[in-house]
Length: 135
Image (tube, rainbow, N blue to C red):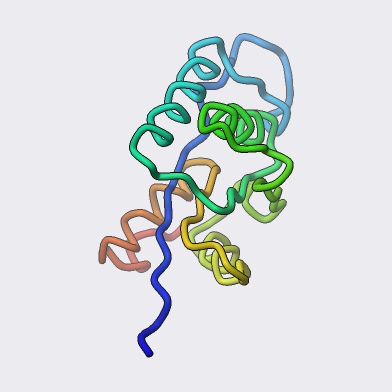
């Protein structure tokens, strides 16, 4: 038998609000980020791209994005979202390690996090190599 195929959806958190005094970790979403998160959830549902697991950074803007996207997809966030503290301010290697920890049945995983890590992961997965992305 061949190796199991999994799909990965990479999602950067919605537009955050820099006008509110808060720490980076607790920075909230702007109204624009809230609306966009709901819209992308509806689009993913329409396109039948529903993840079986959503792994999110626990930062306020990322976890709220994950919840709003799930609601847009009509998925119960409590059943599909896993918060992974290692995804906050994650490097390429952190993200690869986090993905390697996902076991079980998820066929389609959505990763909700931050740049530059998600962009580094995308370039790496597209064959850009890890050497280009050193912090």
